[in-house]
Image (cartoon, rainbow, N blue to C red; front, top):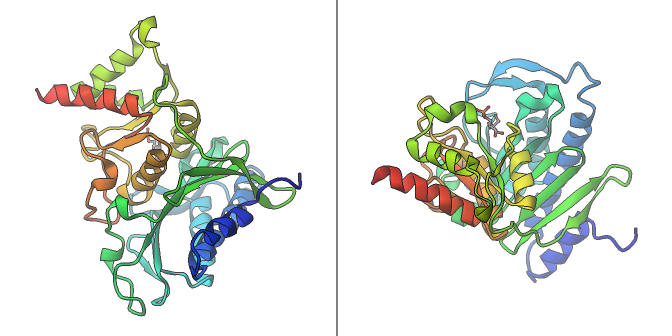
Length: 333
Ligand code: P6P
């Protein structure tokens, strides 16, 4: 086991690629690493700890019932990032407004501390999603909203942690995608999935088909296309929808596939949030050779206007995203 690369070593190795770097970014990633370990420990015993299970009795800005683990995870990431003084501000799904942390910090982070938390009580995989930018307002001044409303193309790093059968961290800094599996015995993340690439086409489509009649005709036509029997084009595809974005995304990243959360009559802008769900996974999927769009536009090119804005989301294997975009564009003609 001594020939393994730990996440800590990987971070230092990559920092060496940037001579003269202050190490601030490495400390930022280390803060995320630490908080992920603490959250993983609680998630893995959530079934035993009634005090951490179930609702926290409050609602978040989305009007969603906050689960106690949501609040716990949010607190852990905020504490770990605050202690290292490298972020000037944090935007979180769990907080209405951004949180000013340290005027001298060079980075901002947007995060969903525990996505899919409605699955906690039924022991389904859940995840943390994070997106990191350099601040654009002067260092030494209080962070501003404009620091958070940058296009996804400006991200310096993005990643997710999936708390599943094992805990994994997958992230990119714009130089490929690498996956690390947590070894709780040693208390370290080990490089297990170097240079991850998503298959250009796949057989898996992930969508809540309960929304079929709430979706546009283009999306309905794509779902019917996916279900048609046509061996020449490897159809019918396989429907796999866990109801946990990180779990569906991670499976599709490895096996190939397409995750969709379109706009619907009850969610005209879609459900997923641009800043801390769509952009970070879009950065990862593009670095892995895949594609992410709102059905018409590249996700990373969208100019954010609000911390919690929602967008329709199609992400995964390039050929599959292109195909659903084709059906959507045909609905307009
Ligand atoms: P629905 C979880 O709340 C989440 O944000 C994603 O993790 C998941 O893919 C989606 O919403 C599930 O939404 O409307 O299908 O239950």
